[in-house]
Figure 1: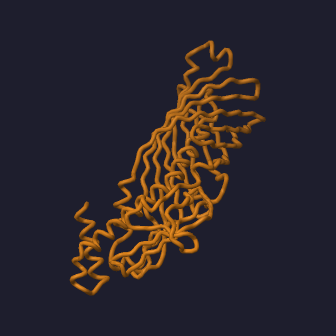
Figure 2: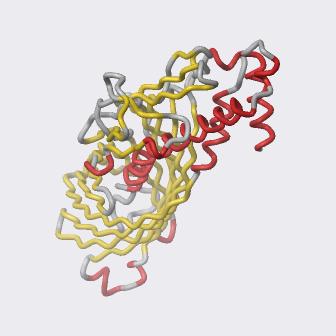
Figure 3: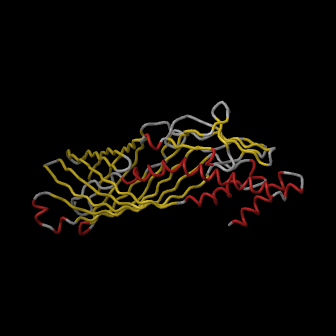
Length: 342
C-alpha cells in the first residue's frame, strides 16, 4: 500500500511541475504525505459523532411487541424518529500540535494556536486549515460546518409478519432523508422469537417475553472539505460513513387491556467505514487524490459495541396502534409510530 501511495504521488507531482529535479524532491513527497495524514485525522474527528448517532437511530423501535400474534398476521407502520443531539458531540478541539501539515486560522484568516470546530452534529462556525507545499503552493481549506440542529428527525417504514412457533420477521426501510448539509438512510431486517409461550404463568398474567436479532445498514453523508488551489479543485467535498450493525434485543412487556408497556435491553456491534464520495476534482487529472485519501481512511475504520435501554408504550384502538419509545445510553433517541395490523 505504501508503494502505491508513492507511485501515484510521484506521477502527480511530475505532471504538475515541470522541473525534473523537483519531481524527485523527497521534501515535497513528505509534505504531501503529511497533508494526507492531517486530512485523515480531521475526517475521523468530524464524522465519528454522526456515525455513532446513526447506530442509536437504527437500533430504536425494532420490536412493536414481545407477544405472540396469530399466524401470518401482518403489521405495517409509519415511524418518525427523533435523535436528540447532545452538546458534547457538537464540536471538538483542534490544536496546531495535532497537525503536521496544517496550521489553524480564524474566520478572519488570522493565525491562532487552537480552535473549537463543529463536528457533523455541530453549528455553522468555521475556521481555516492552511498549509504549504514546497513553500510556493498554498492549500487553504475551510473547516466543514455541522447540521446546526438540536434534533434530527426522519421518517421510515417498518413491517412485520408472524410465522410459525412464535417467530416473526421484521423489516425497516427509509429513503435517503435530506439533512442540513447531509443525507441519511437506514434499512435492515430482523427475526423475533417469543419465549413466554413456553411459560404458562407469564401468559396467565399477560406478561410477554421475546428476543430479537436484527441486522441494519446506515449510510450517512455530509458536505466536507473543498477548495481551489494551484493544483485545481481537490474534490474532497463529500464524506460518507457506512455502518453495519448487528443487534441482539431482549424485551419484556405487561398488558393492561388495550395498553402495553415494554422494557428492552439492546446490545449491538457496529462496523464503521468511511469514504470520500463527492464529485472528483480537477486535480484528478494529474493525481488521484480521492483514491489515495480513501485508502488512507481505512486507517480509521473501527468496530464499536453499545449497550442501550429502551422503554416503550403501545395503545390499541381497533386495528390501529399508537406507539412511542425512548432509547437511552450514551445518546437519547425517541420514536413515534402509527401501525396497522392486518
